[in-house]
Length: 266
Image 1 (cartoon, rainbow, N blue to C red):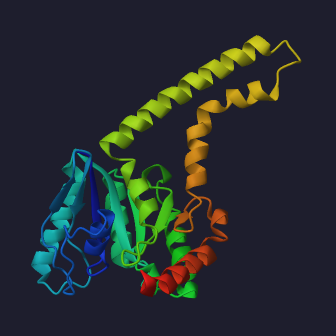
Image 2 (image 1 turned 135 degrees about the vertical axis):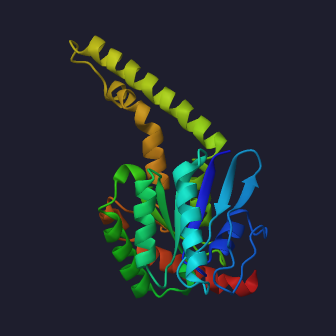
């Protein structure tokens, strides 16, 4: 099965995020004790994909020798896994990025794996702090190989189910069903482009080429436009087109406020 691994600072909310991805089922046991995850835990999601929980780094109160073993375990997995499709770096939105996060990004890039960044606990983060941390995060991602970076930072709250729908959709791209759909869409896009080019050549000598025919020529890119429009969520920040994030912070705070106001009545 395709695998997506979750890794991040100890006590960053990784287990709660995994449970929220499966709609609250407690498959990963959260703990207030940093460093509880000490092995690779694999959670198979039906026959579609697997989530892999890697040991955290940073705060874990363990011997340096054990910490080195965790680093080797993580690096070995990144280097040799044949099923790994994406590495999700989980970051606490209140604390922002750390030097350990940056070191992880280098290891992920060095292994030729795709990196995705998810910011957790946004419901606990003040709007100003969130804006500063997202801006710093996007700036830190700029030097990385764009072909190996998922182009959106996801902001989520596992507690209030904020941004989880968008995150599930992004991760589903790597599932068996998602990859089959992507291949089918790619074939349709290629066929539409070829048909459009053939039609354009046939009409090249005619001044009556309609706007409808011109629109059809670009029909192979409908799937890309559709996904781009779906990615206008306030819980997703575009890494390589930061101007698109202008209204995202205020929209995110508004939705979080609405969620808190509705919570007592649910």
